[in-house]
Image 1 (cartoon, rainbow over the protein chains, first blue to last red):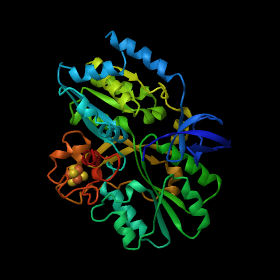
Image 2 (cartoon, chains in turn purple, cyan):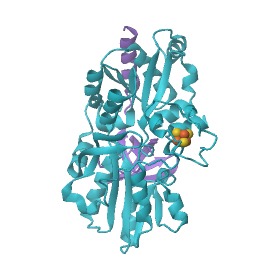
Image 3 (cartoon, helix red, strand yellow):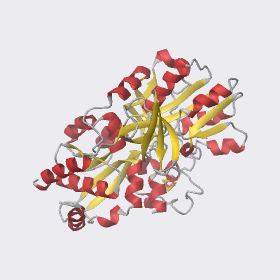
Image 4 (cartoon, rainbow over the protein chains, first blue to last red):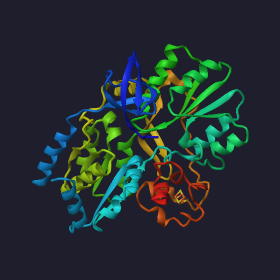
Length: 70
Length: 342
Ligand code: SF4
């Protein structure tokens, strides 16, 4: 039940957002994550649990440089 | 250091034998699907933890859902994963065949429409889950109250992970580090592992779900051996908990002791509805009975990482996904299921 696949927010209306998963549209609650049209989000059982950020890769790189020195 | 260097390092690692526990069932599934154990040196072993919400639910809870499903004017609404989990005698699937009123949904919010369309039926949601799922029930309760819906209740079996890991460290497993689930940490915050990390002087690495992310996390755990350190490799997770989720959950729920399948009662490892919201509770406290349908099932040992599914005499012989004898063979996140499939 914890499978979370990224989807694209195509519209928001109050606490409800429409999410596009490659053409199939689902409704999700955005009560705990501020998101807007165009954001990629992860949805867990009908609740948006996170917005995906674009700078994750560079953060990882820094961490590995640090670990390499251990 | 790129992923190929990491693969070589993990394959050729010749240091002290290390055991890491992946706490989350979704990690167990990805690890098995991507064949990660075969990429690791024999000195690195992965064991699965109690992170599949369906697998840790006790029979007393399932038995209560079964009773409710045949009660007059009552409908049990549940995630699909729960349907085949055996209670002490029957599962919800058995009850459905006997005429029980049971509906499966993808999201708990779907119960709102069901209840509004059929005001004469009492709808009971089988509210299981960990930190990621509990905020959904809080938001659902807000809607129920806002829309003055009188025919929805929750039967809760809500669990929180840190107390269960603490219990395992105290009484059971010898792990050299933990792979913590990224999706749960997005809600609970990476700092939620600090206390445990310091107490047992063990590293926790917060990981995503792809093979690359998992291999990177295992590499990080090897490098952090013996260090009390929480390392977040899941970009979307922060140090702090999601404030809105925390606020909504603490509005409706309070910490309580919880019983875990095969592990017994663990202090403060669960949540129950607060007294002021008891009218939305379908009788969740005290569902503590834990009887395996098949006395040979060793699910309790599996979810605490003490045994592998292959150690169970029923595995793949009597117990298969088509004819499951224990919860670990049912859920897509169950350890036995994942060992059977991959
Ligand atoms: S193989 Fe089946 S019977 Fe054995 S521990 Fe797993 S679920 Fe239980």
